[in-house]
Image (cartoon, rainbow, N blue to C red; front, side, top):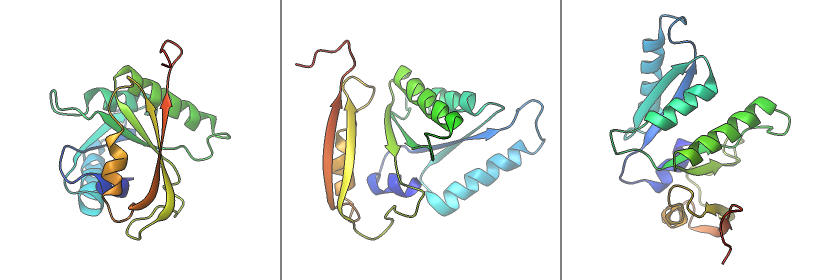
Length: 178
């Protein structure tokens, strides 16, 4: 997913977060080495201008909650969380529940969410331009973050210049549609 993020960002704060599913108190003694290996991997192969947050927790969902709550430096916290769409979400109940819980946690913390779909199946363009590719923005009004500039930022990159942008506005039941 980092290739996608680099298509939008030239400047600004990027935080890459991951969860080590391991009990930090009773797990293996090499958590520090695992953390350093993840940081090195992100910096060497993906994105050198990112802060890397690694959280150890026996529960993946609690680890994600921790990342959403503590990522950033003081008041400088990310306002957008990028997630991959879960593979086989209809059959994999645990992945679906984790995905929905993460969306709920982002909503509670006023984070906008980018869901990246079809990113791991070889269809994601890294360097070659795409044509007639849709960029769908589902914008939740008052949903914690401003996603509307994202298509503009993407369309500035040579890979996405030929894409179509579609914006869908979402309302919850307490909002007036007018």
